[in-house]
Image (cartoon, rainbow, N blue to C red):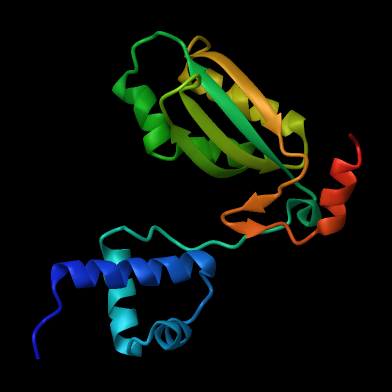
Length: 179
């Protein structure tokens, strides 16, 4: 029996990843049955995707309100200062997570990007004071003049998260009734 071509393997990986994106909790058996693959093939592909870091991890989408938390996006503009290895390592070596934990902030994601802002940090916290304290502590750690601007956006109503629609239709209707 001939081995699969590289192109076919990539297509199979993509199909499995698409199923995991729809539901990361789906079992290997469920994916195999849905795609018409063997259980062993799905398991092997998933393990290879984890090994080569295509899959970083698995997550659950939680209603922040039911956890007594709010979601915030922090938009950052970097000041025109040279980034030292020491400052870069604060971000790379997960120092931000320690600062977040100290301030009772859950660090969800961090991005650097091109555009009007240089970066974004997504967090959840009980209130905006915790988020402001988190930003203050980051500025202390990186240096007072590292960020030219830090804007905090509070999510009022999530409409969709990670491809899943908010199941709380009343919350959505109440928000749009404010117009």
